[in-house]
Length: 193
Image (cartoon, rainbow, N blue to C red; front, side):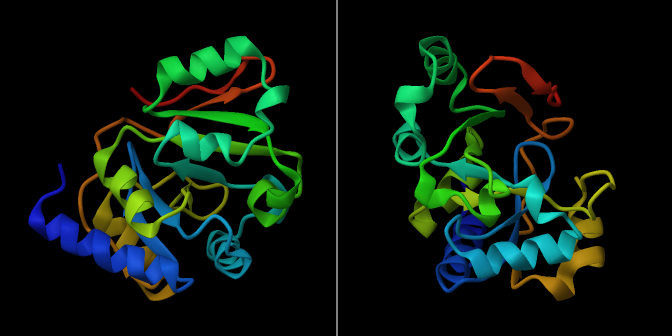
């Protein structure tokens, strides 16, 4: 469970996210830029900070499978994928799934699919819960560069460009999460261990 200091930071970060801000938060293996999943202006800011093409889309972290189901066209997801999601979540596994039309925009790279994860990392889960909605969770780095797992490096490079930094440690995974194609089950990116 988060410590008292972490709770205070999570409360502050969640408040900033609710007001449309961008924060840096620890994730399973690397630090991530986070904002509300449905705030296009905040998503635009993250893309600009990273120098990332809008067409690539961003990963969204959810606090529960129920939250995921509210974002996707679950009738288009194969049973074997649904069963794998229930087996692997919460955990460091991201699934690219058919997305409800109303969420197709900057978040999804204007594609009909959305990359979703139910994090097993208590700090990220708590941030989603306190913010009251799913959150963008994309690695802290410039596009094409390695993701950052050191808080000092994250602060040095990006402190002036975000509204808040949660200075708690990551969960300890050696790199970003695994990514699965939710329709085929194919592993698109092998995650850290």
